[in-house]
Image (cartoon, rainbow, N blue to C red; front, side, top):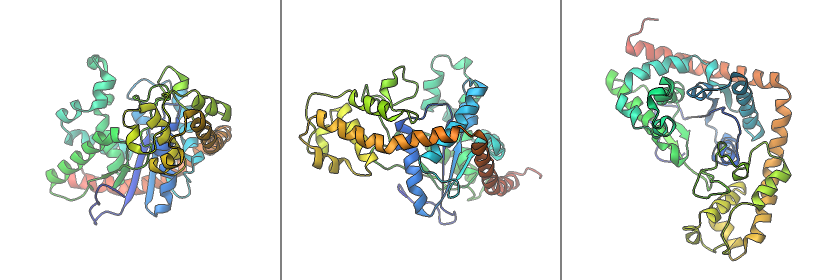
Length: 342
């Protein structure tokens, strides 16, 4: 674990959630799914959630939301997250998330919510027509984490603000009621490619919403598509540098080297020690070969799982039962603390 230690009163536990809004990318894999699979060897209990209630803060087609939830679960499993070693479930099956979120709605302050970057970005100039759920989502996010007394949350650098608000809510609740009940959750930020950038513009994050499919590698892409997208990824005419400092002003080069390092479980320095001085005409085929070897089996396994939705639904139901067994006593104690009669 990184960035500090939780209170010794709390059993170490990892929680993370991903929105089932469709279209898992290489960024989701390297920034989250691969890390989740690798962390299963740590011995710390891990809880991973398809946050379908968060997805609903903006309009979702019901059929597409259901499919995206199952596809996300398939992506977790195909990436190596074992439902027998980690808890996998979808948020709406565990009512304790929404119940604790209401209490946190009453703890959090309006000013905190208004400062959230995601609120400003998604609502934009049309805030009066944005959903109340979109405004209040950080309280639900805090409930997602704290209903399990999660001590650590894997996040990218761009998500630290969200976790800081969770810490603020936990601190205020504990202070308001004179208890040390909720942990002050720590972020876990690590890895060479926790933020994967667009293959067409190295200054922008890889996104499933980008109009150009060539900007991203989808986890449903086959081997030919993966190789083609890497070969056509934007670069500059200079050869690769021999040291990481040489990537400072070269966004596209830095992105591809980061991707290579993350796929290989290596470091940027190690990649450049081997590939420094070589042109992209030599580097890209190596990267394409590595990416196909890592990602093509994932897309194949996702396709297999999606052919049997009942298998996925059974995994999610079992995970929800496991999650609820942890969440119920924590919510019950929360009710006692705030004076709600049970």
